[in-house]
Image 1 (cartoon, rainbow, N blue to C red):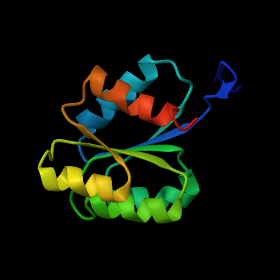
Image 2 (spheres, rainbow, N blue to C red):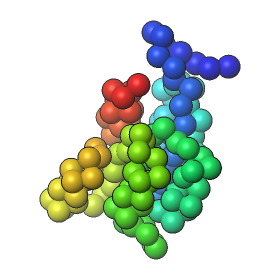
Image 3 (tube, rainbow, N blue to C red):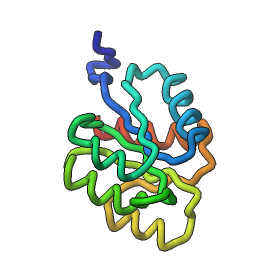
Image 4 (cartoon, rainbow, N blue to C red):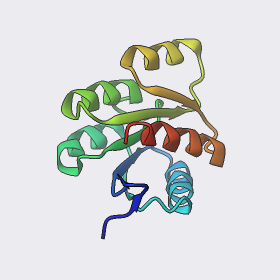
Length: 131
């Protein structure tokens, strides 16, 4: 069954990309607490996210930056090519101005870790603005 709110289809798919199991668990629990009815998928690396992007076809992605292998910026570039309509948030502890600038160049939202209820609400609000 598809969840809806005010005529907006909320049966969406969120992909969480983070090498930290704890961060993935917190993001997932915070999103589930909002009862949006989204399917939540997880990737432990940028490489996995890119490899499975076409199969999983997420509507929304939260992306860490500092990960082994393909970093979050590279993975974001690839995902935006594979899934041009995807809404993506860089959710990272990498708070250098160059990281914020790179997010802007990619056209994605930058949200600073730690993963808190407020950070997740910012991400969800960004995602829903596209719905």
